[in-house]
Image (cartoon, rainbow over all chains, first blue to last red; front, top):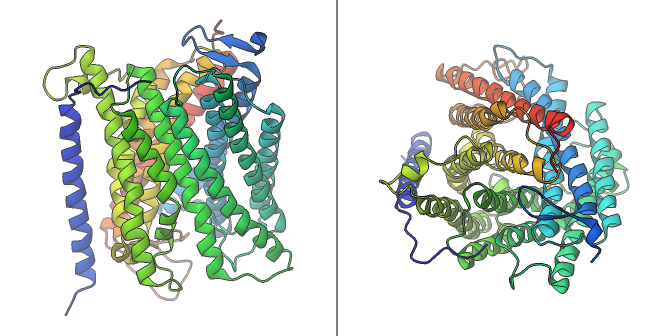
Length: 42
Length: 504
């Protein structure tokens, strides 16, 4: 198995990576928001 | 090198060392049988967790849950990994297996260990669940079974290392370094050695404790046990990712986009994954918060970084390979025209998606101390690890089976129509099952309780938010779909081995 990095272009994977990052951020936010709602600071 | 010990596969052109082939066959067959047993136990557990069915009484529920955990998380996967190690060290390196007699000892010890464990669980002498936390105590034979299994696996790892050394000495492969797949499997085997040593460090005292010879400190047990429990799943991750690279090569002629990056990511697993095991004991009051936050807030993310590198390097390699074949239109033509009718390809892609989007993201979130305190004893955690181990590892291993059958068993896959559907049933089933678990868990549904409606006749009544029942329904549909996908996999594999058309 040799390298395949002679100026490779993978725009589809880049788009998937962005979708992944967005999903990550949303779910992270929702989980902490949920945590904040059950452990309210007064 | 005795040439008569080898044969050449008519499809792949790979040379197969016949003694290694026999070892791959027995380990793979044992793995599939244990998957069937674990799947049957899963059906019992799932149908009991559904309040509308509530199939099993409490004692049999916990017995089935213990059996399900051991059969699926340990036995099926490690037997399959032994087959994978022998394949990666011999077939991919064009090499002979080192110490085949020791490799047979590995198989026998693991098999005897599995039989002892299963016998103890099914006779009610080991109702201790997967973690077997003291003060729950099983029969000494249960701990002995685990030790025999672990020693067998350890021997298998050393046979693998010996085979690599022998291949290097004999110069059986063309390039200076091992192929990426073999390198990944070597990392999995290194993690396995560390894992199994932790296993010895805790199960030998547990055996002596069950015999009444020594005392047992519960918190020490938990800390050391997770040195076994967590990395054992990271052996699976490293092996699964090696399988992704292999499947990418076999299905679309993928080449890794950057060997050094991918190899570095594997090394990150070896260095950091074991330390991150403490994210399993984040709610444990014995260990300090500072300790746990350092461990899971910093160290764990270095291992997560490795997973993210792989989870994007594999699709990128696939995209580059498919674009080279002419699928260059827009962002996703390569994905649309990919060989989805090949069950190995669809299994790999679903495995990457479920592992990354469901198991990976939730793993990082639930692994942070603050969220973990509310999530730990709920079904959210169970949903997370079913997404990694079932949707990720098991599905990837199912995918590679469709190449192992012709390569090693020399049989044409029988029932290809069913095989094409299988990864979809299993993958979509796992998505629904894991999602249902996580969402029901977010409402507080407990992780292990047999009776989530009446809590076993507890004097304190509790009413769930009605939404919980919808997510339980989603879980149930998903579990049945996944079990169906698993049943098709076992059926296709067994029928192919016995009745598939023989290949030259």
